[in-house]
Length: 68
Image (cartoon, rainbow, N blue to C red; front, top):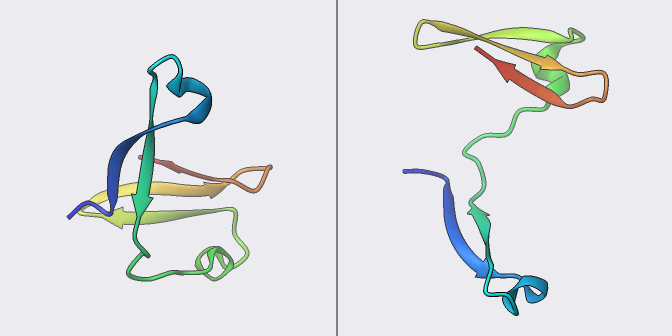
């Protein structure tokens, strides 16, 4: 089952114009892993998912990027 349910809710500023904006409702993830323990001092790691390798890296701004 998808963890994210997309619903449409009206925004007060845009409701006068009839525009709807998506709102995402999420449940808690099954498991949470601290990024510092996952990366263990590295800036990039590889994740094997069903035989494909994905690269997860930390950007200079401290954000995460996942590439296949």
